[in-house]
Length: 325
Image (tube, rainbow, N blue to C red; front, side):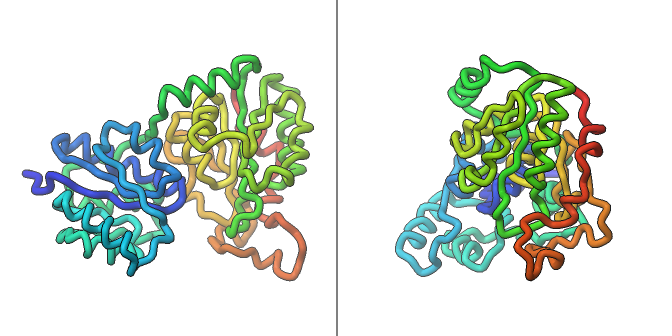
């Protein structure tokens, strides 16, 4: 079938994991239609790995909180208009993003519609399938890092013993409850991994969680990178790991895209929707309300508790049984 789209724009400005999940879409397009020129519009947070991807010819960035009726928005739309895109695959179809594509004069637009019954990778891929019917879905996610970042990771880790196990305990105070594992259980898990494998536990997490996660430093043989690295440097460190363990988060999906063996811990979030894609194991809480897919847990209402019961329910021993290093 002849392709009628020579130059396209893909838009996703959402969370890190969401952008990682779109990589299967544009790699599928490029493999089936190598002459298509693909540009990507995203937030500045994740542009570094898109710029390193040979499937993407150009990366544009925009503040996700941009204002619709702003001179900068109109100037940016004019810049996009000059690219003369044949198609936009809009994976962030908010009103203001659709307003931007209209200003840019892109006549053909495919709009993403979230379907919780499908994995996000499949959901994004199927949005583009309407325009590129001969593409086959990639079986793996892929992101690429600069040599400088990889060299930095080698330098940071050169004195530590393998196996490297990344514990990603960040996101404790995020708006979504039910996807962070309790601190005490992380400590127990880390100590038991060390007792068995005697390697290095790499602690990863968000800067805003740094003081709260300080008790993790007590894990034997641990090295703390919580809030210490840029996102790209953190990705490079994760790429050297033998295993990543995390709740549903951007770093978990980065790990799977980097080919790192991963274990995802799932409570309120549906693993069928955002579970480890092709390179990991999902451990799902068996609590009857899982997955509720809610931002706030009904069991925490009116309490000062931090962790949802669904995540507390996942036992350390259950995780240990899945670890083979």
